[in-house]
Length: 189
Image (cartoon, rainbow, N blue to C red):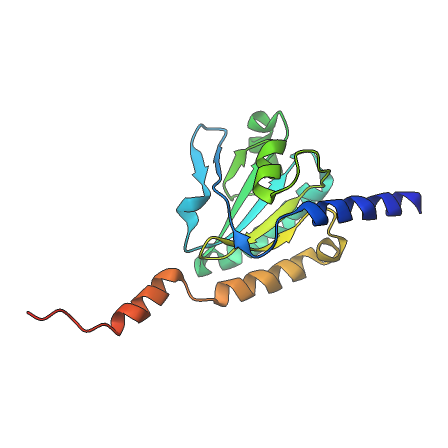
């Protein structure tokens, strides 16, 4: 009983300090183990699952198995996934994590500060991983699921599919521009 009260309080603390949703996604650029950069801004126009995780966390490992089938199935609809490992040995651990759990989405390295800044959490906030953000095609965080979000993670695949499907059905910013530009009068020759 004491543990559930403590967990509930920690979830409340994180929820109380987390940023409001929806909100624009802040800039994020993380290095990959091979030295490349993953830039969130490069994915505007796509629906993005951004997952902060620890490579040795059992819940994060399970979550990779939940995300991969959805990624394979819906990537052609404009879904992208980015993993950001926040453990100190992430550079060495990411390749083994990807191989072991079949994660083919891009993964980069961050740290606690990377997560707290992105989540708009206090630097002293306690949080649990995986910590998942769903970002729409316009670069707006529409859903935020801290690791302590028991309602979400109890049916993670079903909840993730429902939220992502809704975001993927929204028009892309490019198609919105095409529609509005199609109404413009063509230039006279």
